[in-house]
Image (cartoon, rainbow, N blue to C red; front, side, top):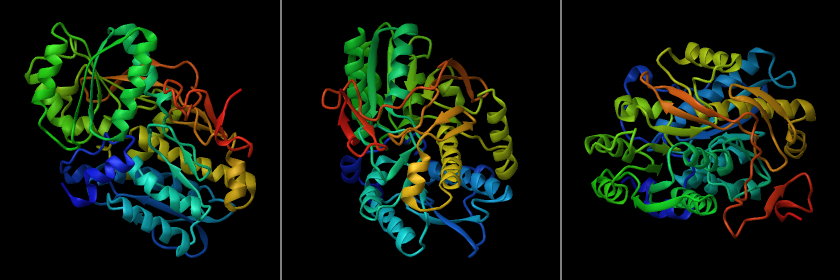
Length: 427
């Protein structure tokens, strides 16, 4: 494995959502476009910090495209405070120390007023000390494991109670009570599965097995054998594996005749782009949990999909992290306009309570630095997109400190009150 993506750093930092880490060359026609707009010196500079090379580029390039789409739209409509947004784009190169170095450069040398960036929790945790020490601000667009609430980060992806926990409830009601947990061997899957085990214990479900593979491993035969032994008559497979492991897993799952009707799998890191790589024929009938799908049938969603395809190509697809990235640029714009300045402290205060009519629904940015979210569960359909089988009636409030984990039960976050801050015990 590339030394830039070594296991030690993953064990140290973990990762939240790496469904797009499938290490396969995409065809040229669908390669994400990441060329930054031509430099301009008379505007407001913002940083874009994602992996444009290395293992994570396959996921993060598309997120960059979504951010640049939002910036282009805002600029065409007059910019922010009468000025154009100038994106300064840097490559984190799938290396966590590089992310920290580039964050420092964007803040100290480029003098950006905010940064949109990162995908993995590893990269986020690598840059967090930089943003905290320099009292700067990061906007982070990917679902993650929670258990964090920094003053210097706005999190626009889901917390576990907005993705993992409702998917477990749905499975218990619709698919059964026996679960086999499979995951990649580092922080996010293990944290997620600890939450799932606590939740199942509280709700009457049962974990019949749990197993992990090193990130990137394609040696999935042993896990499939264990699943068959633990669930001889069928049951639920909850999948927090990431990367190209999913390619081997779903193909061998089918080869072993563990079909979706008897062994439904719920994944939290497979989106529209990954289906293209793994193959829809191997995923048809299985389930995923996200907050947004390309198939959301709303005017805002259709407009987003159309705008993205018009800019980047009709063959491209959009997904949840891309929507989160697109939305966070607009939330920052709104906060700047309310504050009437790009001053970080003023913008942060103005961000609390901001709402946005997004492709996935109307969201509110809370004082705990997380967004309200609509929960959705999708079933992989014949066309390789998602048939939405569950959708929450209202947006779900974010809970950064998990309430199923004993160590954080009863804790919350509220940065609008200095006495409470990032972690306080609720009365």
